[in-house]
Length: 190
Image 1: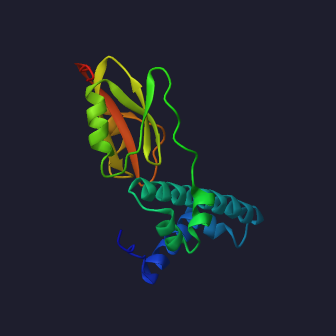
Image 2: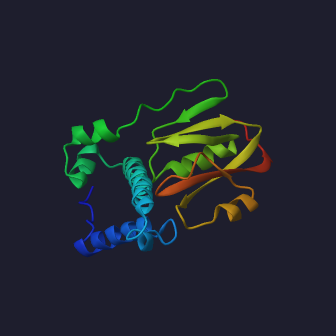
Image 3: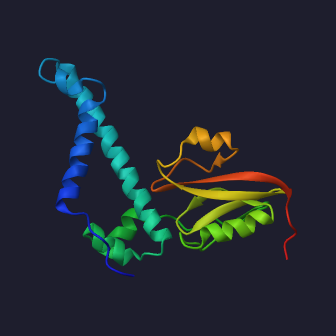
C-alpha cells in the first residue's frame, strides 16, 4: 500500500478551529456567557467532553475503516505515531463473532469487496444485521435483500428510510450500512 496522504498543517488548523467553534457555540451563546456566568464554565466542560467523546469515536471508526480497506496495523501505527503493537492494543477489536443458527458471518471482507459479497448473499436471502472490521453478521430470511453503503452525511436518514432502507446498527464513520428487502423470493444456495 502507498504512503498515506497526510493532513497539511493548514488543514489540521481548520479542523481544530471547527471543533473549538462547535464546542463554544453549542449550547447557544456559550462563548458570550463565559465572561459573566460562572455556570457557563461548567457548561463548557460538558460541551468539550461531548466533543472529545465524538472525536474518539470518529478515530475508532476511521481506524476500523482503514482496517476494512486492508491497511495493516503497522501502517495505522505510523499514521498515529505509535508502534503497530500499540495501535492494535488500543484500537483492535475482538475477533469476528461465530455463526449460529439462522446467522452466519461473512468474513473476511474489505471495503473493496464487501458490497459484491453482500449482493451475492442478499440474492440468497441473507442480510447484514451487524458489522465490524473485516466482517458482516448476516441473518437468513425468505426474500432477497439489497445492501447499500453510504458515506456519512451524504444522504439523509429520512430519505433512505422513506425508500424502505433499514439502518444496520448505528451510523458509523466514515460510512453507514443500510439493507432492504426486495420482495423477491430468495434464490436457493448452491
